[in-house]
Structures are given as C-alpha cells and as structure tokens.
Length: 423
Ligand SMILES: [Zn+2]
Image 1 (spheres, rainbow, N blue to C red):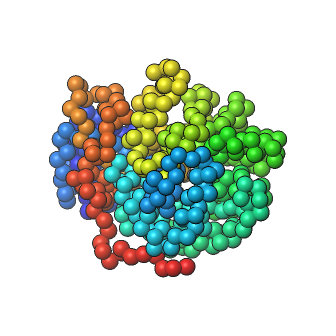
Image 2: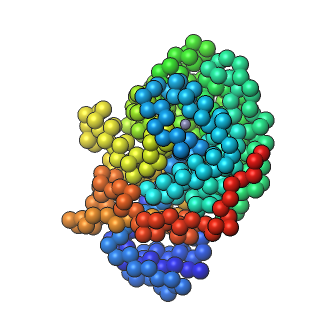
Image 3: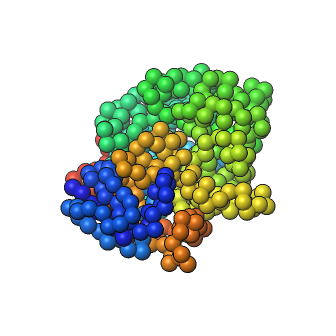
C-alpha cells in the first residue's frame, strides 16, 4: 500500500526545506520526497497549503497519570510524588491502560508520534495503549528501592520481569514498542540498584533512564549522602553514557555540564513541568553551548496538565529568552530540533525516526499553519514554534498508517481494544 502526499511544504528536519513538494510513503517507510508532484501511488492526497514535519518525539512522560490532571497543582516535587503515588499505587491495570490510552490520544493531537514513558513496575498498559491508538512507544518499568533514603521494597525483580514480559509480547520489528528500563531517581534508588538497572540495559541494548537533579531538595539530599552533585554522583556510579536519558537536569554546575557533554548522555528537558513545580529553569543554553544533547519532554499530565509538544516547544523558547533576557539564546530551530531528531537520538531511534528522509519510518504530521507572508524555512519554523497549536494538526501518520485525520483520532479496530490481562 503506497500513499502519495502532494502539494505540501516539507520541513524535513534534515536536508533542505521544500516549499512545495511530495512525500511518497510505501508501507511503513518513506520511499521518496522532494519538489514536484511525485510518482503514482495507491492513494493520493492533495495537501496544498499544508506543512509536513517529522512526528514530534516526547522523551519524558508518565502516561499512567493521565487521568489525574489537577491532582497536585500547587505543591513542590517531594509532596507531589507522595500525593501521586497514593493514586497510581492503587490503580488497576485496566485503569492504568485507560489513562495511558487517553494520554496517547492527547499526545497524537499535538503531533507527537513517539514517546518515552516510564512507570512503576509494568510498561505493559502503556505498550498496549500505544498499539491501540497507533502511537510509537519506548516504554520502561521504573525500579525503586528506597523512599527518600528510608528502606522500601526493592521492585527491581518485578520491574525486570514485567518489562521482559512486555517486550516478549509487544516488541516487534515494526518498532511500535521498544523496551527500556528506568531507575526512578537517586533518592528512590540505592547506588547498587541504579547500577543493576544500567547493567541490564547495557546487556540488552536498552536505553537507561533516570530522573536527575529535578529540585533543590534533591540536590541537598544527594550532597548530604554522597558529598557530590546528583550528576557527579551518577557519574561516579559509571552509569552515564550515550544510552542514558536524564530527565530534568535542572541543577547542573559547570563541571556537571562538562561531564554530561563528555559522556554523551541525553537530557529530557521538561520546561513546563519544572516551572509548574517551582523547581527552576534548566541551564539549557549553557548545556547546548557545551555540546550536551538535549531533547524535549512534557512529563506527566499532573505536573504539566497537557502532553502538548507544540506548547512545550513554545514555552521552552520563551522561558529561556526571558530568564536570560536574550532573544537569541534559543531559536525556533533549536526547539524544533530538540522535539524531533534530538528526541529520536535520546531514545536510540534516530536511524529510524526524527526526520523525513527516504528509508526512514513514515512518522509525520501535516499541519494547516496560518498563511505566511512567504513560505520559507524561517517562516515555517516561526509559525510552528511561536504560533501553532494542536488545532492546526490535521493529519498524523505513524509507521505509515494514518492514525489521526481531520483532527480526529482513528483508533485501531475494536477487536484490539481490550484491557490488558490482570497480572
Ligand atoms: Zn518524570
């Protein structure tokens, strides 16, 4: 089955901008794109006036919390964690699946085609929701073994068992579900557990994720326990490399930034969540200057209230300009790269997704952006980052399949729409 989209402006993320051209999709991959009207195909779509971009990659979510919006709007992170735990801790698999499904649908509406999710114990409800809605998911169970340093149940064995079972069931060559493993954070995991999780990731070739340096209280705790900054502490454990994804990294000193650049670890920058929780503003311009890889995430629907990556790009661009009192400190292009190719790199899928290129997976979004003064690369980037909303997202294609059209989700056939079996 082939699909030809023609008459469309293309911002491919790699290679030159195409003011008017075509994209030919064959099965799950892009076969060709370029200026002109393209070749014949089974289905032809006229997308005149639309702009095609690579699907956005959200590198930090907790979809299980998607139905708890508004639960903890005005508390700091540590109180937030206690509050949300009461809710997800008692949720059934069916409830978690329903939450994950709602989250995937909302994410699709803002042009997200791939997300990285971590959740306590089992990634199965999220893997299932992704398949149901047509969202590409890199999903992790998230291990923990302490509660702010106090002994707590070590969940590593359960998390590994569940992650392997989910991988066996959902991980296919189509890469619609890709397994990963997370350790929650330096304050919910022992050093030994963090290393154990990373070791398994190295053995399996999985991305390893962990929350890092999210709030001031965390920095104080880790300094008290180890005499180090959170980033220096993780480095001393030997877990920082180019297959490590660090969520937040709000508190980094100059040495930490050098360390992350040297190790090649990726930051999941979540500017809205950090602002809402009153954590602070991550030193993103400084990290970019030092060569640290930065991707973009929303975090959960409780600390963000949306999973809208268009809004996240805009908020990121604005807050760094405001804080630095410098409109050149982050450009629209930089935010777009964070939300696409850098995200794909952070989740280990940059050879497959993150840009529109022949041979890559057909994960793309068609937007009806406001008519520009002139349709140039700069005007499209400006529209996308400083003006576009999810209302402008008309069509979303994931793995060659149209999963949202005319602004509406087209879910998988009802036959596959069932809750995962109870564990
Ligand atoms: Zn998180």
